[in-house]
Structure formats: C-alpha cells, structure tokens
Image 1: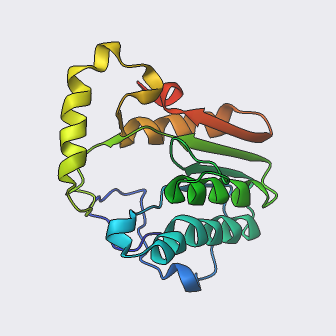
Image 2 (image 1 turned 180 degrees about the vertical axis):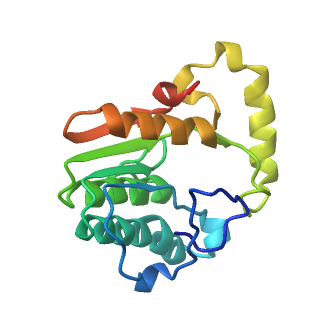
Length: 182
C-alpha cells in the first residue's frame, strides 16, 4: 500500500494506492512491513508530517494486526525518541511507542542513518543538501562508524526481513550498523 503507484513491477508484488485516513479492509496477513515516511518540507507542515509518519504508520500497523499479522517490521529513523526536543525525532519515537503497543508478537524497528538511493525511481523529491551530504559521507566511509554511514534502502529492507524472521518475541531496535551490507 502506498500514497502513489509504484514504478517497480514484479509478479509477486501487488501495489495498492490508498488513503491512509480511510484504509480499506486488509486481507489476512502474517507479517507486515512499513516503510512509509515523508519530510516536513514535502508534507508542508508539522501536522501533515505527523499525519504520515505517525498516524498513517500506526493505522496500517493496527489494520494489519486486526487482519492477523503477528510480526511487524517498520522503518523509523536514527535518533527516534518520544521525548526528543527535535520534532522529527519526537514523532518517530511516538510512532515506535505506538506500534510497539499494538499487541504484535514481534516488532522490529529499523533506525537507518541517511538513506542512499534513487529518489527519482521512488517518486521522491530530489534533495540537494542530502546529495551533498551523501557525497561527503562517501569520501569518509572507511573511517565513519557503521551506525553513522549512509545506507541503501535495499540494505534496510533486506536487514528488516531477515530480522523479523530471526528475532524472538518482543520489540527489537536495529541500528544502521546492524543493517549494513545485507
């Protein structure tokens, strides 16, 4: 499910464009993975950002739990903390807290560093400052601690899938370094 259709096509993939404020009933599911997010700039306001990064994520997780999902994998952000003075990190922390309380057997929360990837292919706005940051980070990759290195969206996804299949019951936080190189 997404806010817009995916460019990616695969025989095992079904893409559904939905309004997260009015989710349709979900089919029976075992596991759910959520990688939904935006930026305050793209959203247009803090309230609109919260509607996506907190309310929509929790709505999907809740609907999937009601449809039988027992394991949840969700992408959050480095620095997430419900008591953070930084709005972005506070909302991500509130989301983590909310999804952890939905009754899943296993919750795996990925906290990647800066995401590196093709934003155009993902229909996301180009971010000049982010491109510059990624270029600089690339120069210092060898001496940058793993939790601070830029990470590909693919590595986050693969790491999250592996973790949700191997972690015991409970809530688990995966820092960026644990997701590197998958």
